[in-house]
Image (cartoon, rainbow over all chains, first blue to last red; front, side):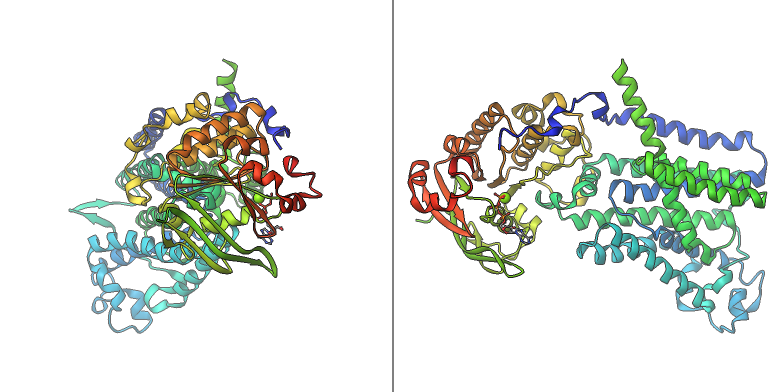
Length: 370
Length: 251
Ligand SMILES: Nc1ncnc2c1ncn2[C@@H]1O[C@H](COP(=O)(O)OP(=O)(O)OP(=O)(O)O)[C@@H](O)[C@H]1O
Ligand SMILES: [Mg+2]
């Protein structure tokens, strides 16, 4: 046996075989990107554009959250929009109750309930009188839901494509439930005509820099939280799980705990993103839990680079940004869908680690030359 | 006085009617270095799979330090002190050598306590020394997927040393190694022997003679013979079992 010379032993190890996890330079790059995001309002005084840009940032947050669970934990969650939608509805319920009864009058009930002959505010709506509680629930509900789903999937050792199928199925079911429970959720129309978010007397106008900054702050916080997780030993163990799930068990780690953890953190960030989205869109709708959005997140993440938090985030911001600037013209938008599909296929075929991965190997080549 | 650390009692494993293990009785003392040999398909790998929880017994009993581990899960078995090296070297290909070793330092297995560990923590202090021991100190930043076969074998052996289990199960650790590398591995194992119990599955008789005290020979899912290298080579039943596979030394 010892005479067998392995093919691989002829491989030469050089700079391109290496990866330096230079945390310091990473923090600097992440910091610069976040700083750039913060200075956008100082040279963009168009309220409409600023509002649009806020939504791009939120999509960036979603892609970053998926990068955490997919790129680092190996969990391809096609139902990321569930957490996003749950968060957005929590915020919408709180903001809706703040319009009652001033705008719609009718005995302290949201308008759509009156139209649906609901007589008393459903129990599930009661906690949302308190904004603090609503914000808490906007994160806690997706987190607990993800933990439950994660518990069933990962204790049962479901992996790979089956995780993708199950999460997608859950998305469809939750979406249908929300549309179906019209008396509580507003059905197809969602929850509209919301009050503006007001905290300590300070208003976050959706078309102002205040809302933009609010989003930029939470994007930065969650980005650095995710970075810290990936840099911790738990993050390394997660990547080991992604690489070779079974092998990790023989070191004594309960793999399911790590999977449930990252799945839940990712859901929490998405829930937060959902709340922010409601603030800038001024409504919540079943499309926020749509299959279209959920699959788009996967594409942004793959194009930007799923194994790079910032790559996934920038991937989403650029793709949605380009799409947004083209969307003025119908024909362009259709072409764009085609272009997007083409880019996605190209990336999957030739850049499995996305654009961020391409940058990394370029850097390694440059190191090699020097 | 009973010093037996690991005991397999009448273990049977049935794969769709085929008995990969067929009433296997096998025991190893604490601190021993036991070699396990046998022709292809004898059930050596399956025996290790049973011990580390990868495969469940159809019938029979596995005890470790006088406690039954028969129905424990893989991570529970690992936590009580059993480590495993696989026949197909299994390391984390997309992680660097350093990260592989960090993951292997697994004294603390909870999600939350590992969440607050950044960089090299206290229990990972021996990492550089360990890398040196297996000649990978120059390659700490190399992705494990880029290592040669022999280096991968050594990395996995190092992972086990980092894990620091009481009992180490090695499945063909020198496969694909050059003579020199094999010799170095033998030295390493003799060094490990004082601190750990080792069960080593190996085909290379030269290697087995270099390290083994007692050799167990498996055939058709059970133990055929047990003894020193000399006793084994003279055993008629063992010779018969190896007939057709070119004799025991070339197995
Ligand atoms: N999962 C499985 N399903 C069905 N049969 C299996 C399975 N695993 C192993 N076997 C069979 O069980 C027998 C014992 O296999 P095992 O891998 O334990 O042998 P081994 O002694 O390790 O052989 P080798 O020296 O080739 O590694 C073989 O005949 C093999 O084909
Ligand atoms: Mg084998």
